[in-house]
Image 1 (cartoon, helix red, strand yellow):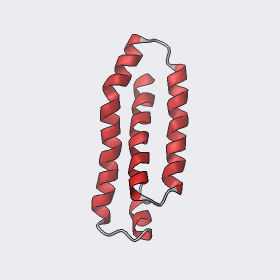
Image 2: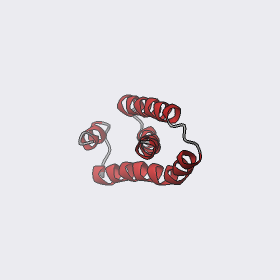
Image 3: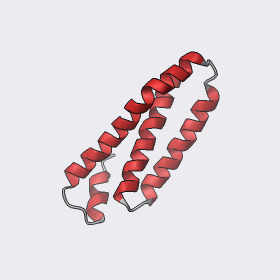
Image 4: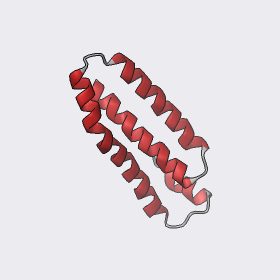
Length: 93
């Protein structure tokens, strides 16, 4: 997301590169934490449509949250949710 540094500067943050890196780590951390439980769930239960639809909806909500919020902690939280939802979508296909 190339607009993240400009958005952080807009909010008056300094050390924008470090803050952007923490957001990327939040996304990766969410994906890593969710990978094993999601893979186990999809291995155990063949029903995938419901979790994929729910995950896609949560991903959309996290995108909206990320767009509208002006607090850095909430932005990182939205990125973590995006990572978890991305893992569900990628693993369930």
